[in-house]
Length: 428
Ligand SMILES: *Cc1c(COP(=O)(O)O)cnc(C)c1O
Image (cartoon, rainbow, N blue to C red; front, side, top):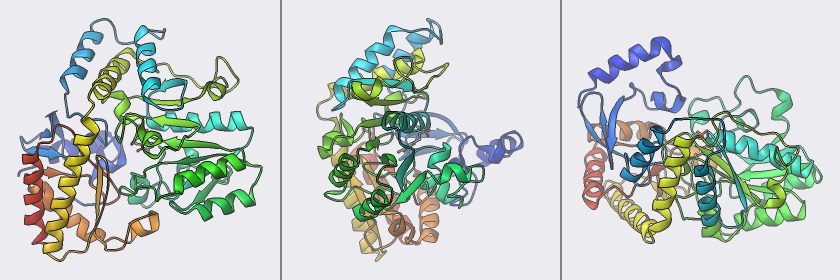
């Protein structure tokens, strides 16, 4: 594979864009080398600036669950664009996607659309604070909820990879209202509640963690969070930006049977356009402006192009009864194949998987929280990443990321990927 053109494009980008990228994890800092520039993508494949074809396991960090350039999404976008791209006035498509989303997700009556997952989580926490009239929040080490100030406290993937878990620019005043707990550890949460019984506005959690690799909740963890929130009259926020419309139609609420109070969305819900959303019961949503006192707004929120893409995506997910099973089967097949090869080469590994999310950790201890995720062999991951890339497979350039399986992947693609692991394993 040749990367001359990508290198040149990166040099040019670096002159005018800090680090050459508009989001840090794209920069390959954690694995070395220079990022690959994309020309186009279709189905399961990326085509880069040098004409290489790569099988894509990032899928825009999640949204492309049905593959790149999915025709119904592209058609909806093109049709909508011809009618004008933004009005700052209500449009019917906003109600259409809201009705569909609310019908797919358990336990919510209303949804508000924003422009990113970050905005969704930031607004959800403001709403939780406004509704509960309390100020502190509990988050988990290694969980990522976007880059707004209150969340940049041990924030998983990007933030961890760059060694700045507490980013300069976040004030001490803000940081003191974010309390840190340990994922899959209810005691750590109970202790924080006991020490601050009247002050916790909400617990925000990735109900399946995806930003320290993929870490499913252990049995009882989500149920326990629900109980603690009920006991202390706190709001439970599920950040389903990654898992929503990916692990099931109704996300992790549906999978686990545990209801949250506010649910955040992003990624899949926008069909590849910049969309986020948060949803809750009437009682909570009525606190939002213009009905209630909690302010939240956006010039481009509910943008018609974004809504058209999201609506086409959700319709496709809603109408395909076998989709989530099919995705889970493909992911299980990949898991089995990779595990077989790594075991045959006596390479220590732990593979976590749920639905269409999977992560490979080069350590043999179970990966259940941020600390155990951090104990993996990251030098080995770097070599693995570059070996896979040379074999035409694009996985996330960081050991703390989840791989996303798309419906566009064929079993032939999966076999090709497992063969690539076989070749790389010999060199690890
Ligand atoms: C990606 C992600 C976010 C942030 O979404 P952006 O659209 O990147 O702002 C928040 N929470 C989780 C769980 C995510 O995976």
